[in-house]
Image (cartoon, rainbow, N blue to C red; front, side, top):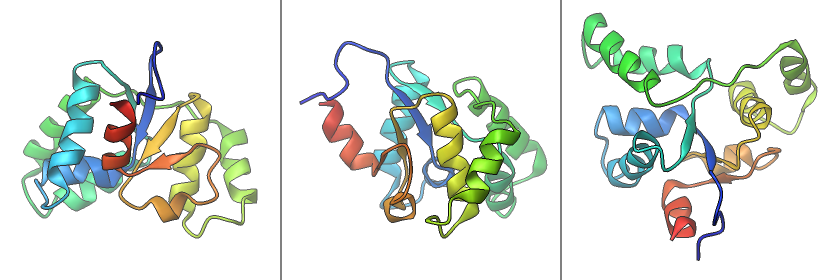
Length: 145
């Protein structure tokens, strides 16, 4: 059953989803790629937190040249928007003690800033205290029907 029927669905992708696709990491590639394709085809409104970009760069630098990484990230930004977060969002993240990882808390604040329906991640437990619900790629695909 599609829980998001008759409206645009906004999703914020965790960096691990993008890295799974760019590095074709098994066994995660198929579901993560399906999510990316839904964003690419504009069936989903896709977002990536600003701070995910340097994190993705850092991981990809071991797999290719700076030129290749620039090209991949530029292409990525053709299909994904970056939420604008402000000082108030960072302050909110700093005050939230339930998150073990500040980066994940900032992702939650980024998702919240754009009224995202969910965060798609492979590390769902990292978002146990998030304002925005988090789903594994497979869970989200199943919900979409």
